[in-house]
Image (tube, rainbow, N blue to C red):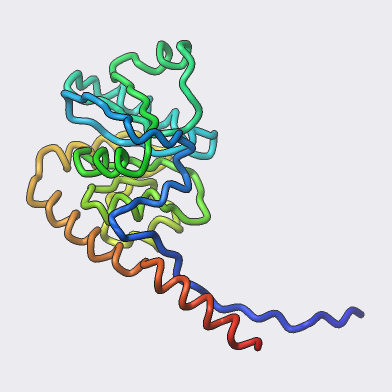
Length: 210
C-alpha cells in the first residue's frame, strides 16, 4: 500500500492580454511589423497550426462544397503552404496565407466575416477569445471545451456534418441582427477571461502555501 500526498486542486480562469495587443501563442507566424495584406473579398479567418487535430481538411472541404466565389479563406500563421497544398485545396475557395505581427492579426479579426475553429479537441483556445474580444463573430466545433469557454457567444457545428457548418455561415451572411447580437455576447464573454484575473488567482494560490 502506498501513501500518496494530498493533492490540492483549484481551478484558475485563463485569460488573454487586453491592452489592444493580441497574444499570438498559437499563430506560429513571423513577427513582421511591415506586413500587410490586400483583400477585396469577404473572408473567413483560420488562425494557427493545421495539425491533424485542428481539422483543417474538414473546413476546406466544407468551403469548397459551398462553391461561393465571393468568399476567401485567410489563414494566419501556421506552417507555410506548399504549392501542392494550395492546388489541392483551392478547388472552389481561394486561400491566402498571411504571416505577421499582433497588429496585422487584429486588423484581420476586425474585418473578417468570422473566425472558424474546427478543432477536434483543445485544452483551451486563445484564438476563440481573441475573436470574441475583437468583435469578430466566431464559429467553432461543438466540443466540450469550446462550449465551456464560449457558451452562447459562438455558433457551433457538428464535426461529423459539413452541412451544419454551412448553415452557420449562411446564418451570418443573411442575418445581420443575429450577427450583431453574437458580437455583443462575444465582447461580454471575453471580459470574463482577463489576464489580470488569471495572474491574481495564480498568485493567491501560491500565497496559500507560504
